[in-house]
Amino acid sequence: MSIPQSGGGPIEHVSQLAEYLAAGCKPKDQWRIGTEHEKFGYCRDTLDPLPYDGPRSIKAMLEGLRDRFGWTPVLEGAHIIGLEKDGANVSLEPGGQLELSGAPLETIHQTCDEVNQHLREVREVADAIGVGFIGLGAAPIWTHDQMPVMPKGRYRLMTDYMDRVGTMGKTMMYRTCTVQVNLDFASEADMVQKLRVALALQPVATALFANSPFLEGKPNGHKSWRARVWRDLDPARTGMLPFVFEDGFGFEQWVDYALDVPMYFVYRDGQYIDALGQSFRDFLRGELPALPGEMPSLSDWADHLTTIFPEARVKKFIEMRGADGGPWRRLCALPAFWVGLTYDQSALDAAWDLAKGLDAQTRDGLRVAASVEGLRGEAGGVRLQDLAREAVAIAEAGLKARARPGAGGMLPDETHFLNALKESVETGQTPADELLARYHGDWQGDLTRIYGDYSY
Image 1 (cartoon, rainbow, N blue to C red):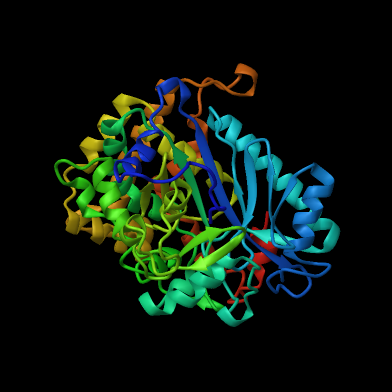
Image 2 (image 1 turned 90 degrees about the horizontal axis):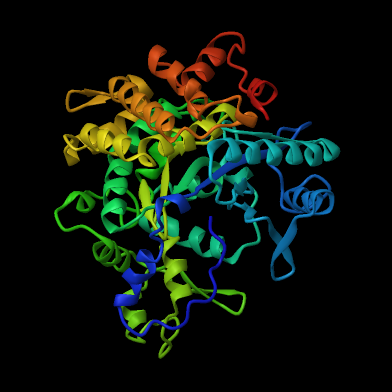
């Protein structure tokens, strides 16, 4: 989840909202890669989730990273709720999931080095206090009542609202994890092409990274339960956004969509003010019930954009949001997949050729099929394994064309980061399939074994 935005000045005309998005346009030589990933922390002796406070806790983790590795603390009131260093930040999801939002970097080699360094730091602090971390799309055993609540005003408001608009919002908040990548665009037309590819092929990413087949100690009937959760969270702010594929789509149409998404809050003087269900359009007229007579700033608009949760979304960059959290190889594979598809024009054109024949019904059907069956799913006569094979091949060609060397020149490009995905498309096996095989095999139904075998 995002931290509060700041600056930007008052909004004096609605055109500033689209201009805010357009300000993200960058020439290709300035495109960067920002990788985010979340993970569950737990006490090694009890396997319970980490509380916020105490000797084995989220707070102890943040303080340890601060003290050992020079991170700068981020506070909300008296509580440490995050860290910042060198363009990256560590933040908390509602149930204490620890998230690294990486710095904007030029290559997958760099972003993978960043992930490795972060996990080394986390492991050092965790080992000292008897804590472990595991990368999964959903908590495999814990119930909602077992989950701690982080001391963040934003999350208190969201928790109160979730049951009004869906059935699984609190499950998303407290018991799921993702890996995402944030990517740049050169122009409005480039944004449109990338966002359409992102939305149409997001079910492929969901299938390739499916890693949440358990809930409350037993199989849940889905390869990606996390993806299932997102389908019944809040229809006003989630989904596959068919309007993006309509003629004339651009920044202004995204603004119109975002303005129709009900608000959560307004952030003022360190406090989250309840604006649940209220309208940003009213805010623009000075008629927001939460702050009558007050006009919004661009930072309020930036905050509002962080409360919109479709499968891919636009801010000053595009976020790819469809993948489950997972093991180390998948944390590096996710940015490699999307960079390969979108940062080389020939690859992007090929990806759009692959995606443009999928109508809205098929796209939605694939989203459901990916959640339930992973790569074995199909919809509208399209098999996800076949679609994934083509998409991964295009991504590999895109990374070869980028030709960004690593390891001091020993690696000619970034294609090796796709190896885990190439294995999946050949075998049809997702991480969830491996977990289920272990559960029914050598674990003999003892799901506590997942912590010892799959922690970082």
